[in-house]
Length: 427
Image (cartoon, rainbow, N blue to C red):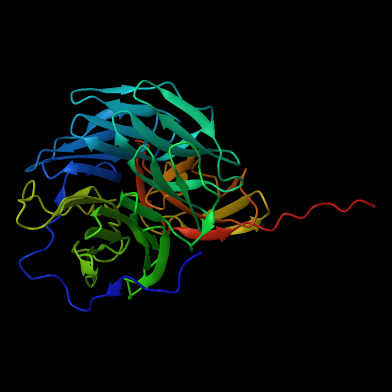
């Protein structure tokens, strides 16, 4: 349980004016970057999920980003972890894990039929843990340098989401029911309820920070403390990354970033000019005092400003044409049971006619969406999502698809809670 103490204080003043984030640069305008991992300030990898159509990777060399490179032609990439510049693992919604050896990417066999891998964390090239879900099961897979083992399900009936493994004898993971679980090298602990946490980062086995909507909790030498508000204006913290117990960064869907210096958090800094949530910072990764973050519009930023930005390209924010279909309207649930949600919508009121629709669900890590149904017909007005868990919150959005099948404008996410499962009475 969470202790009553509050070890992390909220700082009312921002860091020194000479320290800040770089200008956003457009590095992946056709994709939606879902995650970034930086083992150093001179090497980062970002992955994107192009609405279930393909997954691309981009690399950063300390001064500029590479062009996106196709890695997964059968699905989008949800997460990536690089403990060094010569080893990375990326996981996909189609159940595959891809490894990078410093030169090339290679794919594993699918880790499970119907498996949707959402998160991965690697302590080294010989130890990684990936989480995923298949139907009503939440699974964990382990990589030992030569292959993957699993699945195991340490948190039934819940699903593990974001996780952090600083060593091969310690991992911490959060689930979709407000719990944290730890791994000691051989077994997972029982779930420990700490709050509605969505992201976690542990630079060591004795220090972690987890985020809960607009708040942060701190794990220090075996005990959790908090939560402490760090996003007082409201919103949703999407990710947090700590390179040490005295340096962390957190980012939000509202294009804001906060820095932790060991004593407290800076005030939120809106680092993307849009500021309307249309770009949505999705992931952040820190190494030393360097951080990189990516947003859903294909932009990347680095911290601090003493590190040169990759280029001077402007923020990419697509502008609709007169024939481009806008987002569907009146997107809402019309029927909810313990295991299914029926969603309804109306066609866009302006713009061209969509060639179809796609429905996506927020992954357990709360950073990225993965496809539930893509390329629904243009005349479809309802879709039922099945295989859900009773009394669980899910978040869905719908997108209009263009004639080329690419996603266009989308609605904001909609939270829906499934009903309580009722057991039949035996007479």
